[in-house]
Image 1 (cartoon, rainbow, N blue to C red):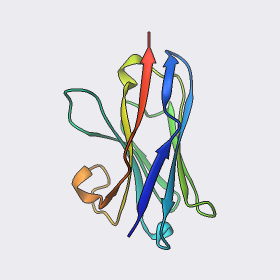
Image 2 (spheres, one colour):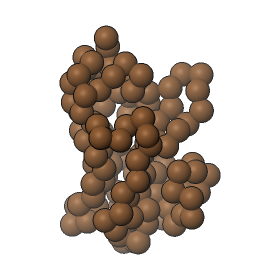
Image 3 (cartoon, rainbow, N blue to C red):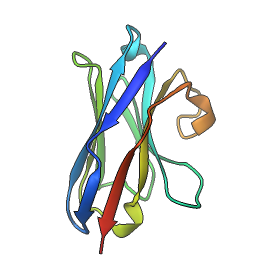
Image 4 (cartoon, one colour):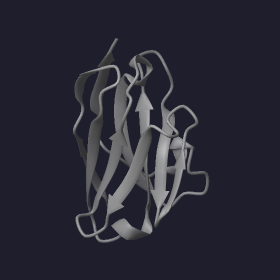
Length: 121
């Protein structure tokens, strides 16, 4: 069993930065793929970034602006978001699982409660 708790969301202006954190419980943290998804009102949940060991993967819409990282000693995954745009506004979710397709939400077994990110223009 893995429990995930996100933090770090907030209201910022376009061009600003935020860092999201996802604190994970459970002994098998290092063996799971970890990912960030987001969901805007009226839209489907979409993949943002994933990390397994040191291998990272990003959605085209955030590549070059967002960075995913993990601190295994702290069982924490981070999402550094730079150059934020209004279209990045969404609830951001942390996910964990042993996955095949890292971009597919259905592959992940564990989810956090989400943290709101709002970017004003």
